[in-house]
Length: 106
Length: 427
Ligand code: HEM
Ligand code: FES
Picture (spheres, each protein chain N blue to C red):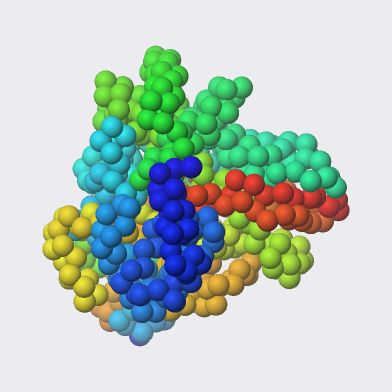
């Protein structure tokens, strides 16, 4: 079971253990980690599941997809490490992943 | 009465069974034409969509006053179409009927990338989170003024006194529009949306042109003024200063189109959510009690109001290529209508979808704002506006009582009300 750490904008950290196969967005939502709205339920169509991937993990999480890129084009405060967390699928390789949350999902 | 409405009325009167159209279950499936504006005005559309979701979720209507079109009626199918902008194009019509050429003005909601992207990015900072935080105190103050001036214990039209007034003031703020002239905004919005393509046209072409020309002139002056001043965070200043849009005035139709988008986008939609909430809470008094007992439910209720009302019944796309979708063959050039009002009642995704619940779980999961790259740009403004309004209503009134049948708009696009008689009860 990969472990993920979500760090809220104010610095509060949440550690969750989730089975591989789901998305990082689902890991947050199913464990009541605040700060992710996920209005579209993971369809890569709302950009309210925005996170910043910790630098050390950038290679392992892979690249943004085409649609993900289009959605991030209209999100606020996008950085090089920005991803839509519904588009990162959890594998055992991602055990220990750390992501930061933006101030708000809009 | 519009031509479309006249045809509809005629059809109704002529038919053997004059009331058959009210009951879609009594009609042959292939004849169902859910885009008729009269269905929404008479509030019989819900059964049409219930039947389509059950019997033919991706439905083809071969003959209608708007030409042939597909109806997408299930939640997940709507998300799929809305987020596939490469196949389902927004250019150049986003409502079921094609705008006649003489009515056409380009606007970014009806464009594909890259034009859509650069223009949206130019306008978007006006509604960015930091900007909204700055606006909140002002909006609250205006909400309080409007509510404090309302008569208590005496009938009045909520649509005029609250829904329209509040929305107009919000729009004036986003444009930094001269406050004393603010009533021009909903006037222009009404004229701009009076086109035959949504089944609503009570203004002649000449009248419409004249009025929109006035709108263009007025904003042209604001544009010149803002261009010569430092950049600010209102729509006009942002467009006038952005390198991608700074010459938009040279193409007056495009300038006008985008103005209309920004005015109309925030006008009917928010207005009708404001009225819709009052109606929903009257129909479900136990929900009002629940809310009064727990005002922290307001933000959740706001999402539920917007789902339940679905201020825009549909958006339309045009297929850029042949595609098989849920077993149906959609052909290049076909009109594809995503019925948000139907997706928001889809029991497969939304439990007890016909019920209005202030404490609904996952209330944000609705299709009223669309999805994908065209997802509503003003959704957070709209939510903020409604949140502040309901917070301040709870502070002031025991109850808002609806005392007469609301009158609905004749349109297959804008779902809303022209009249909502209410009486306020003091706390
Ligand atoms: C409850 C209120 C509102 C509702 C239900 C609503 C609904 C929608 C819908 C359905 C779309 C199209 C989405 C799609 O095609 O996928 C849209 C787009 C848009 N809305 Fe809203 N809207 C609301 C309020 C506002 C406000 C307050 C503003 C501005 C002040 C606004 C500005 C826009 C703009 C500019 C677009 C075009 C976005 C694009 O094409 O990229 N809307 N809205
Ligand atoms: S949940 Fe909507 S884009 Fe990720």
